[in-house]
Image: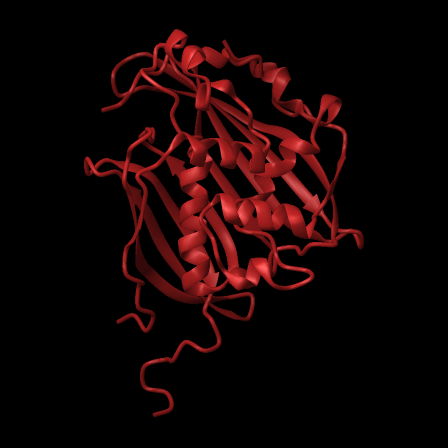
Length: 141
Length: 149
């Protein structure tokens, strides 16, 4: 039985080229395939598509809103499907297990960013320290 | 084709200053309005912030070139960040060191050999403590990647 409750889904979008460009500027990854229409088409893609790390960053935002910015200890991202302009993304979370490590109470979670097609864009497996304010079942009142 | 002899190639150490404004910019670009990133004088970095090594890791500090992956067939497969304690904060000067740790091949689901390359980057603070590690896994497919859907 888990004592930590996953948050409601977070819906982002429709994704725009502006979202992609702002992320590129912030991250420093200026690969033109993510903002230059002609370059993207010449590379065999219908339009520019998002940097995978943008949607991974959305899952980081979703998870740290839930469990706290200071509490992240591990964040492993697997890139699955590309994200295109107009996509509506839904971030969801599941608690995998709670455990102790290095003297800290920790929780492993699985985070998913899903496109409106049902296709998974990114999956993240993350470990957080359990926030101090999180009640534990059977403790206190 | 990836150059398998690149395993063990290590970049020169590079400096990376963690800055409040940059953290704010990155948090905003990833849809965050979390006051933990926006309010303090010395906020911690977001989980994926260390990707901004793009601004710091140049020239001989980046060993990735040694792999000689074909960028047209290259994809980012996985990316992992491990923090040894709370994430580092604005005001910290990190020293990063990257190395190519592993290159291996697998058969792809739709035929063709895929080559995976793993690069590890260690981040130490001013006291010499290891505060974070980034693990990037790149893949070179047998054919240029196409839209999956």
